[in-house]
Each structure stands twice: as C-alpha cells, then as structure tokens.
Length: 238
Image (cartoon, rainbow, N blue to C red; front, top):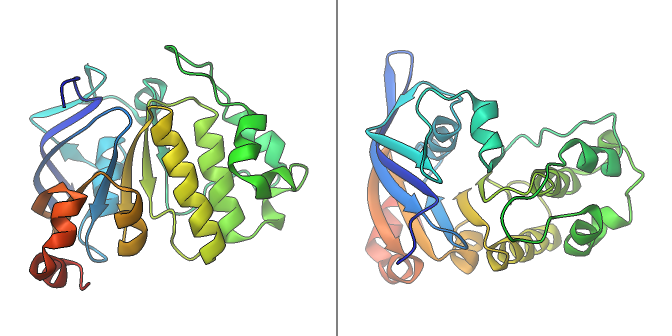
C-alpha cells in the first residue's frame, strides 16, 4: 500500500515467565484494512494483541502506532494514541446501562472522520438501541460483546484490536459483528482481528496472518490463504 501503515510491528517476541510464546512476528496494519490473525487455540493470537497493548512482557525491534513508539508505554497511553482493544472476556460495566457504558467510553474524535455517537452506534447495532436503558448484567453474552465493541468505538480509535468477537455468540449476532467490522473499515478504521472462526474471518478480512506455536507460518491476502488448502489443513484444520 502507498500510504504509511498505522501500526508497524517488527520482530515481536513475548514470554510468560520463562516460557517464550511469540517468536519474531512482523507485520503492518493500514487504515481501512481488516487483517485477520488466525491459528489454532493456543497459537499465540491473544498474546500478540496483549503484547501490542503492553499487557504482557514483550520486546520488538520496532513497534509503532501512527509513528509513535509503543516501547515501554503503559497501556492507557497506548489507548490514548487511538489504538482500541476489545478483549475476549467482554469487560463492560455490568452495573451501568447500555447508554452509561457508551458514555464511559466517549473520547473526542481527531482528524477528519465523523465521530461515533450513541445514535450512530445504535444504527450499527439495532439490538443495543432496543435496550439502551438495560444494565450490562441483564444482557446476553452476544449483546455484551456488541456493547464492548460499541463502547470502544465511542473512543473514536484509528485502529481496533478485536479478540475473538464471534466466540460463543448466536449466528445472528455474528452476522451483526461482521456488518459492524465492515462499517469500521468503510470509516477508515483499521482492524486487527484475532479469530478461530475461519468462515467469519475469511468473509470480512483483506489479509491474513497464520500463527502456529507462536511463529508466523503465512502472511498474505485472504484470497491466497483460501486457495492454499494444504496450509489451512495443517495449521487451521479447515
């Protein structure tokens, strides 16, 4: 791509204690791109996202977001740069309503993009519009996942790291998730998508990275990965 990437990672390694779990990952993420990080359970996908956000001990020859070095920055400062993170475990404020959760995530928009507002997000997630006064602890897992993504968007990020957004939710909500990610892409938001659901990732992603045991086995277009049946069978079981 001709424009500089938003996120650049070069030779990323990460460990839990003495156990090294990532081995020299390198990739870039551009505005308006959906990049899928795929692999079997335990391959290192979630650790990659946590390492970028400064949540696990990690080192890299280069780790930048919008030209800012991420090295040694605490997680809250990384988020302030405009890098959103949606963890797998749906961390909403369960004692707050949908609207209150959204307000908790509000941050002024930068650049020329239209800011995300509750009304825009209610159009993106109609289910949330119908329960705007409902508390988080009265919502299903899929509804909580939608709220987590919507609250992150209220921070008007330039890029979002999404960890297993389709995990354990109903097919109709999975479809809403896909539409939401496509809407983010149309707005120029970059998405790094960590997924085990191959069909979901393949349907919305421009490029893919395959991780196996913490190492990169493939990086290229989603079309290339879809055409490589042998690699998919070996690393993804599909």
